[in-house]
Amino acid sequence: MKRPALLLLVLGLVAALAAQAPAQGERPKRRKDRCTFCDHDPEVLAANGMSHGPFPFARTDSTRIAEQGLWRPTLLETEHFRILGDFPAWKIPMDEVKAYRAELAALRDRWPLVKEKPGTLDRWYRIHLLGERLEALYDRFCELVGTSDEEFLDPARNEQRGVGRYLGEKEKYEVMVFAEASAYREFMVDTWGLGYLKPQCWNNVDRDCMWFGVNLQTEDIHHDKHLAAVVVHNVAHNLLNGYMHYSYEMPVWIYTGIGHWAERAFDDRFNTFCTIEGSFDVGKAAKDWAVQVRKLVEKDRAASFAQFLRKKSLAELDFPDHLVSWSKFQFLAEEHPQKMAAWLTRLKTRRDARGMPDGRNLDAAQRAAFKDLFGWTLAQAEEAWRSWVLATYPAQ
Image (cartoon, rainbow, N blue to C red):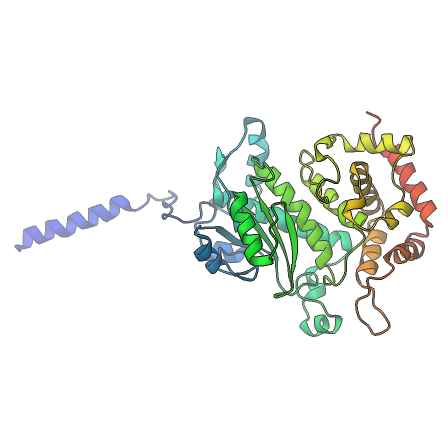
């Protein structure tokens, strides 16, 4: 090749490369199949304590789940959670654009690639937002029970107490989302031996962590925040169960109350009911829960603390019981936060004479804890709650 021709070829290659390079100050194009939220940038992810996997999950790991399920789940690991599943693209309704823009704007300091005005949330935006919302829930739960990550950083102390790094569990809390009911059922049967379609919390004893799964089809979930609300409700159950290790069941009204308390604080348009099949019609779900609870109090139809202590399973809770459990939990958590933190921790850390976890006689333990920490008998606790409802909740 003659020199002029060679020179022209080199100059042509340089020009082509220059044309592909972004102009100064212009955002570089994202590579194909990279996260639209963070571009899989290892520095940005590490700065936020996150990654896109792979990671251990359920009774296997994210890679094997993808291979065996003939699907490509979206993955996100945060500081305290592992999330895996289907997150279909979702168009933001016009009346919610402002709220979503504000939520995303608050994240741009930590996630510089986040768009200011997205019209549609793709799978990457949805899983990242869910991760952020779950980390916010984790912080709120720590505040509720009066603890922090530092409480669980010392492995020797954890071993002595029989607890793990993540509030008491050894591994991170897990969330799995399916688009289709059939795929969810297949996974449930293969993994847990349970052919179930409803949302399910599971204690994974193999790895000592709490798992939650849901499918969008069975729950008729079409809204991004509806999915987040269902996850928040059930992960609140798992955080309570995992706190100081999942060694025994908490009283059913507390278990129910914390789920509603967490979910309604996130978005009170969506309400999840953990029930025994056919126990009541969840279609009755009232929008104005505070108004409904006030009416129950005024008519003396609200379940008392003493009655709740005698209810042992979800099958014993009717629709009004769900509303009242939320209200009683809200009252204790928000009006008496320090006492409530000590109360929950005492119930979660009971030990028998051998030093083993002791979940027996929790009704008596609740009475004793009310007396010792609040200075109330059950009747006095009931009167304090009723007075608060009538002074706080609207009549209509």
